[in-house]
Length: 629
Image 1 (spheres, helix red, strand yellow):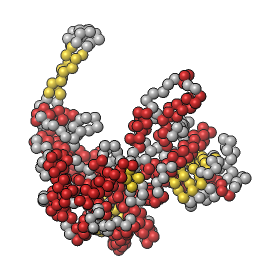
Image 2: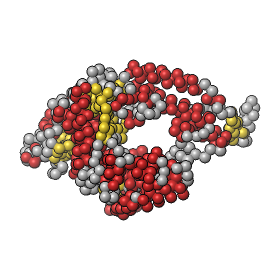
Image 3: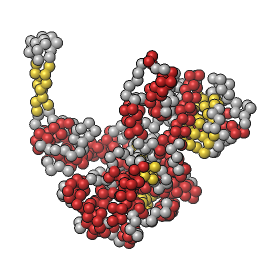
Image 4: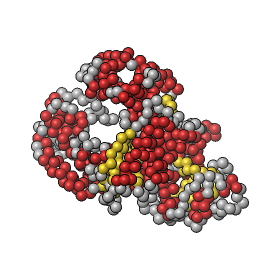
């Protein structure tokens, strides 16, 4: 008996308990890469609410229950609790269904930050307890918990959900080195919050297909990150030296691009100082000369405004002009061109070696980079990447992109397969157009961008930019800029397109009608929520979500097939960036087969979702990412 709860799963246990469904949580002596022991396990029955607790000496009994459970539900179970138990007890595995409320939260609550803002506005203050009746106090208790710290806004963590659900997770600061009763109490409370969260999320009635897909992807993404991607440190070090020299060369004279300026501010001295001219209590004007700092975005903004009367069109969340290599590169000012190159070099150096998640800093002892892919959590359902974000590795067509992608390779003797879905978003668009299959026909046997160009009377290259901009929610001003015009030109161009492509206009209208219920419906039945005031992005939401779901199903099928045919020791995925897969294979023969499998599964994915326009893929076999994509 631990803390008043039975720890013997066999004692007076009904069969439904032995083979039950459990909310589960564990406490350990550290994070996943450092932990060495499991302090305790707490199980809360999903049907009876019975709580089973297992202290340090009863862990194996808890493992037995988990291994034979019908279902295990925990928060971040897939990425932490499960791997932690497997690390300390290598033979442990859950044989039943695994439900992760973190995965559910990211799937179902895609607009969680906006929801938190609304809640914060709903409960702006709390009255003194003394003026409340018991009923009023209980209601306000819930409101108090609902007002969570702003640093938790947008978080899918259990602590944030405790506030939202008025089931506070609580705090534990007793240390993690050894087991304690307060640690166990904290663990018990976590299962209670997990239960409340599970019930809240399942009440949203998302279809089982979407739940299963996201859970499958969570497992796959964890494996991709853990597989690691072989990184050429020797080449990376040489590239770092080259970029450092380039930065040093660029810095010569950059600080002289703009002349110094004088800054004045009022100052009231607290005491007399004759040498500085201070008189206590009297206003003194302090002046200083400021030298231009090429690394300061505020300095760059000020100098460009002052010298050229520059009027920026893009701004940061704090209201300052957006200053980066892209913005500066678009300006026809000599100083901006020099600064754009400097910012580009700084960005590449940050990615390669100097940033907090730089590639060279993330290489493990085995020469591989392990990264994190979060399969959900964005409004559209696209995956997120971090630590490091390999989705930002520059394409070979961008400056230093070739050199950067050459760093991502495979072990000696192995081959790398790079494969991506062809024309994903436009094929998805074709599947939603009620045009008798004309758009699909143009994609499969014609020239889709020339087809668009013919509808609006522009060059093919302009038409390609136009259709993607229109599909992804560009406004009249942006559309107009594509043809060198203004908002009125963009509006006219769209009107011409809608007139000549009535199926497109019909789709837009249908989406507007469907959005009145507050959401669209994805390919797997999931709800696609709409941000307020973003009606023009409805098609973008539909297409991005469709693309994301298709890519996830494709990855799931490819992963399943290569595991069955070759096993994870001979072929495995090292990178997934939206519609692109990178797979390491033991030899060229296996790589050729894996490429065939990936292409076949792309076509099958389209059949699975019954898309009107078939899906397809293409790829290459080589040694580095630079050569495969």
